[in-house]
Length: 319
Image (cartoon, rainbow, N blue to C red; front, side):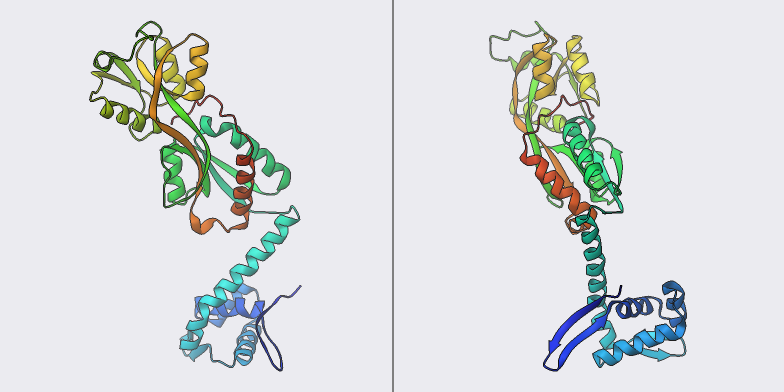
């Protein structure tokens, strides 16, 4: 099948440019050589020359300067090169969109996840993708929220889930879920019927994650608002461990709402209240990648799933 792109309609007919001529034009411009272009395009050199001549005749412009060293773009050719590249990209996206509509979307999408907080939605998303696009290759990358956010920014993954109080404004982001953060203490450590004595709490050991996590930032805000910092801090990197240490009377800590309420119900911890900050679960990607057919299909599914109520499982990841 051959494709033609209409550039404009003239009174005496339609001015058309063959997509293969555009591809030849862009390849010769990149290589600066008909010989090299013919090898890449799997065409004979006369066929490449014929494509260039036909395109120049159609446009009424000289696209290249022929020199002893090869082919160099003329000023007119240089002016049209970006448009030609854009048209080729649009043609590629059109074909991929057609495959997607037929359920034949191919290619690879690299997704990042911070494990626990996104587990339920991620499971739903992967199930939908495998059903609707069985030939789409999904490659998962796991890490902390900070690691996933950095991987998206650096292009190491195409999109991903991470928790943060605020999203990275340089990224396109979808708010997936939100939940509170509770202050949890071992049972009987503190009188739960009175307001917390923050100076007393400052003298007790605390179990905290790293400062660049959402609970780490929430802890910093909590300490600043009450003008204290714990005398002893035990660093952990997983919420399951934080919960276990609090239940084991090692120290006071912060737990996401799902884990905190479950631990209180089971008598493992005593909740002293919530922090002032809400943690949000985000799905993000780089804005300039949003229209890639594979990623576009993923984003559409995430948006559909977010409309449905999402129960956040007890987080168990390094936040």
